[in-house]
Image (cartoon, rainbow, N blue to C red; front, side, top):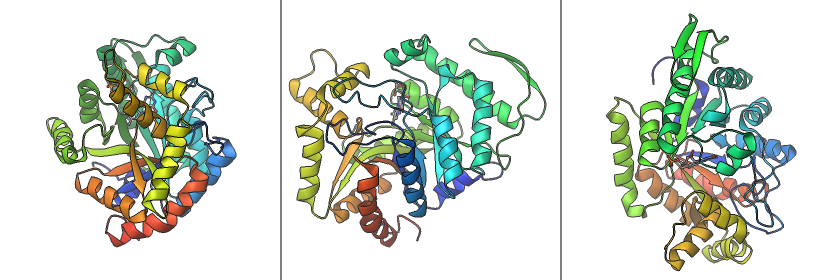
Length: 371
Ligand SMILES: Cc1cc2nc3c(=O)[nH]c(=O)nc-3n(C[C@H](O)[C@H](O)[C@H](O)COP(=O)(O)O)c2cc1C
């Protein structure tokens, strides 16, 4: 990394395998379920969770960028905090943990967004991180009255957006930018991010175009593990090679749904209880259709698997087992080249403490996390 290393990178560099909590800013979090203990994303719960995670030495809190619910009986994710303001509150409430904003390119003017993020970064003394999402959800964009550009255009717009933001953060003199999507003049953003270097940039995407965008611009590519575990090392190498083609180094984060219980049987039963017996199937269906995961003519078995994966954790890979199983899986992902995992728990406040007490010390013993 060039320049002065800011706090968010330092925090994440401490551990061989970074760990964060994903999705706590939205009702239901990652789990599309009707169980009574499903996540209530109140501010009180978010703040309590952030402090608990911070005290436990967790690396980051990563919000979902959501504006509207997925329907179903729970209207999954319908109550959601806007993420840059959420991150600012989390940073003001904590000491060491990184808080990301998950920012939709086309919904925020880049200069205004650059300033909002600088504000969050100063509140957190360098602990703000940017997760860029170029968007996919027509329903949400319609709600905001914004036309979601076609796929390739979305990333072209994203390129202009990130170019403007990074210039606004680094250039001492006022600058002009004349792009296809944005024209800004005599742009002068002060103060600069805390400590002088830019916040860490993560990009979330799965398509080749989305991954190319991340390879070109991000410190971290945040991507789903859709492949078999055996294929992960090769996939990671491919992603890293894409960044190397731009003379860049990139880390890979992935999303996981975590169920850890004293025995594997209990963990599997709990997963079955919330993600199968009590799934909010209509919301899960809306998610897989909206994201284009469910395709016409897809075999029923594959549809079922996609629905359970959606219900289990918004499409994240499940990690289910006793503490040793969880550690073994995490070790394997780390050895496959994954730098950090963004985790969902059905109820973060109820379920994180067991993970903290049983899994974190084992990860230290395995050399995956610092003391
Ligand atoms: C791990 C991961 C997390 C994502 N999180 C969000 C999110 O919080 N909000 C959102 O609107 N899109 C999210 N996305 C969607 C991406 O930003 C992108 O719009 C989507 O993957 C479609 O682009 P693609 O075809 O390039 O993958 C996420 C994608 C991935 C892979």
